[in-house]
Length: 314
Length: 304
Image (cartoon, rainbow over all chains, first blue to last red; front, side, top):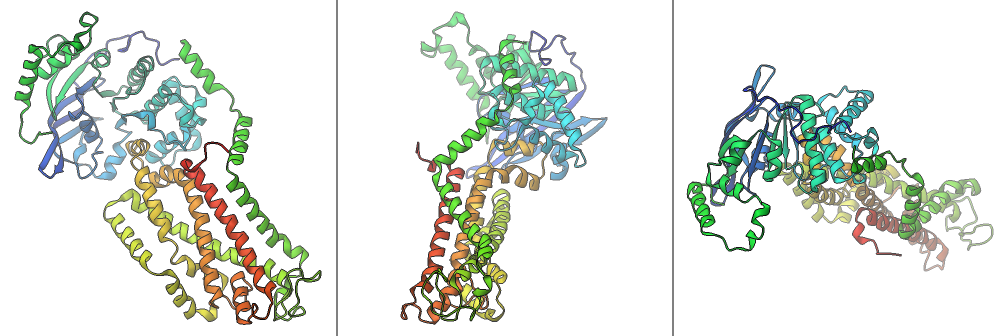
């Protein structure tokens, strides 16, 4: 397999972090109307993704991390909407605000500029269509003149990049294992060499060995096409090995953004502190059985205090 | 290259076992006797109507071509009617005409129903509201009354083809509604979101991603529509509202009623069309139920 010759998830060479932004999200707000007024699922999120960077977005369920990812893809389902904010994509010296593009312009951006590996990719392939049909559809959606030969050539190239044999093309999704399906999804997401790959919990529902291989594959193809990765997840252990910087989301807000080292060694926000302290260690075996200690209660109280923002009732 | 990788590679590099696929198809068909029996009966009917002309003089389906009012005999196995038609010839000529009415109506109804159902189900919103509203309103209209009115007003010039279109005019709403409800569930699947994320256009998603998933369902709906259309056309024809010069099964029933076949004891005149209709409907029903089992595996029995 050519995809994972390295022994660490992050790759052999530490990618040098540049200050060359690819994606700038400014004051993003996603609203869902409810009977009790608009609910801000994403409430003024701002962050920058640099070229070649791996940025992690963590937070508990319902914190708005997946919604942020979907908003960048402009895939928020009505009645939800992007209420305000800018999603600036910088490429080829140009800057486009994706929040203001027409649906057709946005359709062209998907896959060619920003692609997404969706959550629960176990079902992300159409059960009645062969793997090669998925590549054909994706390529034809952006280039109607692509010939069968060109499509097959590109598919074989992509399958090799994610370490799958070319014969995978003629299989149906149910003939693939979970890890293989996920690697097909990764191959699909880089079909048109996008600038940004959004991975929304791409390894949920996979066992740890397969999880590792999928992460290696993702890192490998990212390096090959020079894309940036926005990684959405809640597995701190996985993130620690993969990402360069982390944004911690809590109740729709980005409460802390820092390098992965700083987040682990010196978390500032109380929620981040709780997140880090909840990571299991062998030294604390049996800790679950203890009643919540006084310090935990204090942490929880201080989080509630900081997060008590209007409109963010859940 | 570790062990897991090698295993995976062996798996995907293994040549596809076509023998296995054939064996499972055979095994599956044995477990779906409805489909097999229905299809065999239907094939027998097709053979009867397409091979029949080789053995029977189809000119005898016209009036005054045979000795009138003859009970089934060696010469006329199905007997002859009051007008001097050889009823065997009538059956050979009339069955494909009746099938033609059903097929025209079934194809048109499923075509319109599929397009409207897919559009309404996938797009939702006001498009769905309009299409669903029109379907619901038309579904409340008593179909036979409208069909009788339409057929009666064009009675003189009605042909087998127009008969099919008349029946199709009120046959597309039910397919549209059922297909729409299937699409409502399909459009929420993860692979549809994946298609959107890949930048596919709406028509491409509808016809390349959603429609292939509906094919077994469409097949079952199609067979159902064909039998409903045949039933409607026979109903109209038995009332005398069909093509007057074509010996379809429904028109044969009409003539037998008009000439008091039952009272006069000419039982063979009315038995022929009714027996053929029963066989035809049995085969269509069995095929529809068999296809339904493919579309909806929960209907399958555990083992049979």
